[in-house]
Image (cartoon, rainbow, N blue to C red; front, top):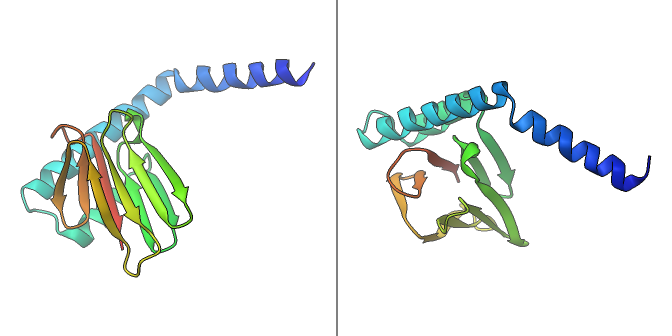
Length: 141
Protein backbone atom coordinates (compact mmCIF):
# COMPACT_ATOMS: atom_id res chain seq x y z
CA UNK A 1 0.00 0.00 0.00
CA UNK A 2 1.48 3.36 -1.03
CA UNK A 3 1.76 6.32 1.35
CA UNK A 4 -1.10 8.02 -0.50
CA UNK A 5 -3.40 5.03 0.03
CA UNK A 6 -2.37 4.84 3.69
CA UNK A 7 -3.07 8.54 4.13
CA UNK A 8 -6.47 8.23 2.44
CA UNK A 9 -7.34 5.27 4.67
CA UNK A 10 -6.28 7.18 7.81
CA UNK A 11 -8.34 10.22 6.79
CA UNK A 12 -11.37 8.02 6.16
CA UNK A 13 -10.97 6.42 9.59
CA UNK A 14 -10.76 9.82 11.31
CA UNK A 15 -13.79 11.07 9.34
CA UNK A 16 -15.81 8.00 10.37
CA UNK A 17 -14.83 8.48 14.01
CA UNK A 18 -15.78 12.17 13.92
CA UNK A 19 -19.18 11.34 12.44
CA UNK A 20 -19.92 8.55 14.92
CA UNK A 21 -22.76 8.62 17.41
CA UNK A 22 -20.27 8.78 20.30
CA UNK A 23 -18.61 11.88 18.83
CA UNK A 24 -22.00 13.54 18.39
CA UNK A 25 -22.92 12.71 22.01
CA UNK A 26 -19.65 14.18 23.30
CA UNK A 27 -20.18 17.32 21.21
CA UNK A 28 -23.72 17.73 22.57
CA UNK A 29 -22.48 17.33 26.15
CA UNK A 30 -19.72 19.88 25.53
CA UNK A 31 -22.24 22.38 24.16
CA UNK A 32 -24.50 21.82 27.15
CA UNK A 33 -21.62 22.30 29.59
CA UNK A 34 -20.58 25.50 27.84
CA UNK A 35 -24.10 26.92 27.94
CA UNK A 36 -24.43 26.14 31.67
CA UNK A 37 -21.01 27.63 32.47
CA UNK A 38 -21.73 30.78 30.45
CA UNK A 39 -25.08 31.20 32.20
CA UNK A 40 -23.49 30.81 35.64
CA UNK A 41 -20.76 33.32 34.83
CA UNK A 42 -23.26 35.83 33.41
CA UNK A 43 -25.43 35.47 36.51
CA UNK A 44 -22.41 36.03 38.75
CA UNK A 45 -22.75 32.62 40.37
CA UNK A 46 -19.22 31.62 39.37
CA UNK A 47 -16.17 33.80 40.04
CA UNK A 48 -13.03 33.77 37.90
CA UNK A 49 -11.23 30.97 39.74
CA UNK A 50 -14.33 28.80 39.92
CA UNK A 51 -14.93 29.27 36.18
CA UNK A 52 -11.51 27.76 35.43
CA UNK A 53 -12.09 24.85 37.81
CA UNK A 54 -15.55 24.17 36.38
CA UNK A 55 -14.30 24.40 32.78
CA UNK A 56 -11.46 21.96 33.51
CA UNK A 57 -13.92 19.51 35.05
CA UNK A 58 -15.54 18.88 31.65
CA UNK A 59 -13.65 15.97 30.03
CA UNK A 60 -14.57 17.12 26.52
CA UNK A 61 -12.93 20.53 26.91
CA UNK A 62 -9.83 21.49 24.95
CA UNK A 63 -6.95 22.55 27.20
CA UNK A 64 -3.78 24.33 26.07
CA UNK A 65 -0.84 25.45 28.17
CA UNK A 66 1.70 27.74 26.52
CA UNK A 67 4.20 30.04 28.23
CA UNK A 68 2.17 32.09 30.78
CA UNK A 69 -1.27 30.99 29.56
CA UNK A 70 -3.56 28.15 30.59
CA UNK A 71 -6.46 28.08 28.19
CA UNK A 72 -9.62 25.95 28.31
CA UNK A 73 -12.20 25.87 25.51
CA UNK A 74 -15.38 24.37 26.92
CA UNK A 75 -17.04 23.59 23.60
CA UNK A 76 -14.36 22.89 20.98
CA UNK A 77 -16.88 21.22 18.68
CA UNK A 78 -17.84 24.45 16.91
CA UNK A 79 -14.74 24.84 14.71
CA UNK A 80 -12.46 26.38 17.31
CA UNK A 81 -8.80 26.71 16.34
CA UNK A 82 -5.84 27.62 18.51
CA UNK A 83 -2.82 28.84 16.54
CA UNK A 84 0.58 30.31 17.33
CA UNK A 85 1.25 32.94 14.64
CA UNK A 86 4.53 33.96 16.26
CA UNK A 87 6.77 32.94 19.14
CA UNK A 88 4.76 34.60 21.91
CA UNK A 89 1.17 34.90 20.68
CA UNK A 90 -1.82 32.57 20.78
CA UNK A 91 -4.91 33.15 18.66
CA UNK A 92 -8.18 31.41 19.51
CA UNK A 93 -10.69 31.66 16.65
CA UNK A 94 -14.11 30.17 15.93
CA UNK A 95 -13.77 30.09 12.14
CA UNK A 96 -16.53 32.70 11.77
CA UNK A 97 -14.46 35.86 12.26
CA UNK A 98 -14.48 35.91 16.06
CA UNK A 99 -11.40 35.39 18.18
CA UNK A 100 -8.97 36.34 20.91
CA UNK A 101 -5.33 37.37 20.52
CA UNK A 102 -3.32 36.55 23.65
CA UNK A 103 0.16 37.84 24.53
CA UNK A 104 1.50 34.67 26.15
CA UNK A 105 5.00 36.01 26.82
CA UNK A 106 3.88 38.77 29.18
CA UNK A 107 3.83 37.91 32.88
CA UNK A 108 0.95 37.84 33.48
CA UNK A 109 -0.31 37.09 29.99
CA UNK A 110 -3.25 39.13 28.71
CA UNK A 111 -5.76 39.35 25.88
CA UNK A 112 -4.41 42.01 23.53
CA UNK A 113 -7.36 42.03 21.15
CA UNK A 114 -10.87 40.66 20.83
CA UNK A 115 -11.83 40.27 17.18
CA UNK A 116 -15.40 40.20 15.94
CA UNK A 117 -18.29 39.54 18.28
CA UNK A 118 -16.62 38.43 21.53
CA UNK A 119 -18.36 38.85 24.87
CA UNK A 120 -16.30 39.07 28.06
CA UNK A 121 -18.41 37.16 30.56
CA UNK A 122 -16.01 37.77 33.46
CA UNK A 123 -12.38 38.67 34.01
CA UNK A 124 -11.12 35.44 32.52
CA UNK A 125 -14.08 34.01 30.59
CA UNK A 126 -15.04 34.88 27.02
CA UNK A 127 -17.80 33.79 24.64
CA UNK A 128 -16.82 33.81 20.97
CA UNK A 129 -19.60 34.71 18.60
CA UNK A 130 -23.17 35.66 19.40
CA UNK A 131 -24.20 35.41 23.03
CA UNK A 132 -25.10 31.75 22.72
CA UNK A 133 -22.83 30.35 25.41
CA UNK A 134 -21.41 27.74 23.06
CA UNK A 135 -17.79 28.71 22.33
CA UNK A 136 -16.72 29.58 25.86
CA UNK A 137 -13.00 30.23 26.41
CA UNK A 138 -11.63 30.36 29.97
CA UNK A 139 -8.12 31.73 30.51
CA UNK A 140 -5.75 31.61 33.43
CA UNK A 141 -2.88 34.08 33.45
